[in-house]
Image (cartoon, rainbow, N blue to C red; front, side, top):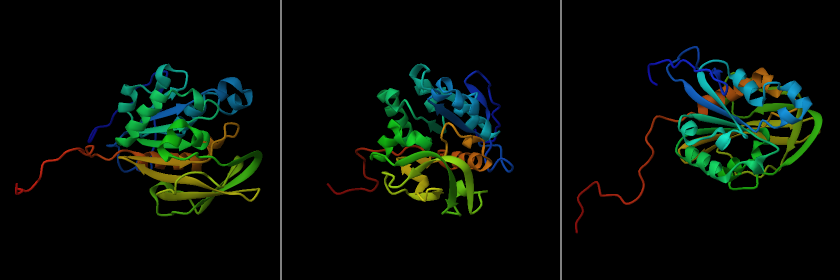
Length: 267
């Protein structure tokens, strides 16, 4: 992909291109992004369909703009849309799920897990904290406190030099969101980028970075299905920045197992 601009191919489950913070300076590295969504709330709940008429996945993809090739995948597609071919052609996977975590096939979870260990980036959004893949990667229960009461959320940038926070002020606010509160049952993040405060007084670690094998994982809290969160400019910027951060490095997977000595050895 070095030195060439890949033009996006548009088909019913492949939508356009996404922008990144580096778009103005380079177009030589095009990220291949797959956005996975259960796509159940939008089909069963008129309130959600009104907010996201084309689905949460499409809103996230359209919010990314231009700069990457975007593919969409949903729960009810064969193999949940996450075939070996799709995942092997994905630099960063974005995951949104809520009401059907239990319906995700364990074999697909293992497939995604192996791709992360081999370098694919993973961005887990909002209620994806309870997804099988996130819990597998964290090794904990990933439980938390929650409340649906139109709380204001104020997200504070606690790592201002982190690339995911580029272009974001000291904080930004979402006027209405679901509350998530501590304790959040996750391992200590390798890097914490955002901390949220809510109207009721709760706080939450809302932007968490991890390294797993060769892959990078970012958990980003906002995004309840009944609120227009994914149209917010700051939220869109954070996700675009996270795509750039989580994208794989150009390095071969390490060689493991029995190794011959590099220097002569006495028998």
